[in-house]
Length: 302
Ligand code: CP
Ligand code: NVA
Image 1 (cartoon, protein in one colour):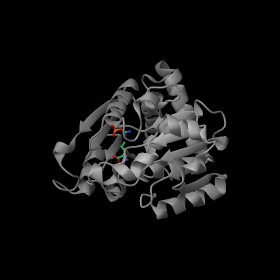
Image 2 (cartoon, protein in one colour):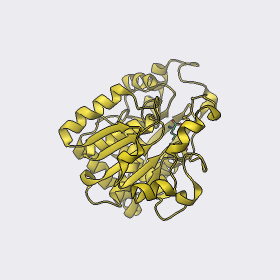
Image 3 (spheres, protein in one colour):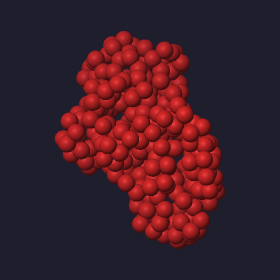
Image 4 (tube, helix red, strand yellow):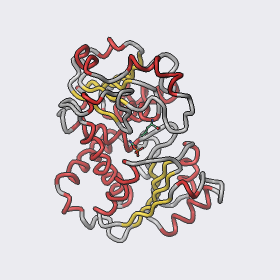
C-alpha cells in the first residue's frame, strides 16, 4: 500500500493493522512522540474543513513532524499551475501529501506525478480516512467486526462509499438506507460487493427503514454535501423520515450512533440523541486523528 485514495488499496490484514496501530497510538502517545521527527506533511484543502484540517495538523505535531497547510486561497488545483507540477514540487520538499479536492481525478493525477504518498482527505467520491476512523470507533465497542451490523442513513455519498469499502474489506454488514434517487454510486457499490464476496461481508442498499431492525450502529451525514447547491427546502421533506432520532432508535433497537459531522441538529440528527448515551460521535471525531496518524506512519515510514 503506497497511497490511500479510495481505500480499496488495503488488504483486510492492512486494514486490521491500521486499526490496531490507531488503538496503540491512542493508548500510548509517548511511544510515538518522535515517530515522524524530521518529516513534513503538506495538507491541501480545496474545500472547507474543521475535523480533517485540525486532526492532520495536530496529529503530525504529536508524532514530532511538521504540517504545512495550504488553503482554498490557492484556488482550485490546476488553476495556477498544473496538478502534475504541484505534485512534483511538493515531492521535493515534503514526505507526504494530504489533499481534499472537488474531483477524484485530481488525486489520481497527483498520485501519478508525486514521488511521496498521497492521502485522500475527502473528494467527491470517497472519504477513506473517515471510513477507517469509523471502524476504529466500532472496533472499540465491538470485539468482532464481522458480526457488526452498521446502517448508514441518508444521502448515498462519499462517506457512504467509504463505509461500504472499509466494511467490505473488514467483513462487516453495511446497509445504506437512502431516499429514492439518492442511492450510492452503482459502480462503487459493485466494487465493494466484489470485495465483500471475498471477505464474507454484506453490502446492501434499501429505502426501507424497517430493513435495519436489529442493527447495532446507525450512521448519519449531512443531507447536502459540499459542492451540492440544491436548496435545502427542496429535499427537506424527502429526507426528514431519514433523520436519526429517538424514535429511530426505539423502532430499530439500534444501540450506537455515529455521524461524521458536521451535523445539522434538528435535520440529519436530533440534539437529544447526538448528546445522549448512544452517541459515539465525539469519540469518532477524536479517532480521526489516531487512525490518520496510523495511516501516515504506515505510508511514510514504509
Ligand atoms: N468529517 C469531516 O471530514 O469533517 P470536516 O469536513 O470538518 O473535516
Ligand atoms: N458528505 C459530506 C462529508 C463531510 C465530512 C461532504 O462531502 O460534504
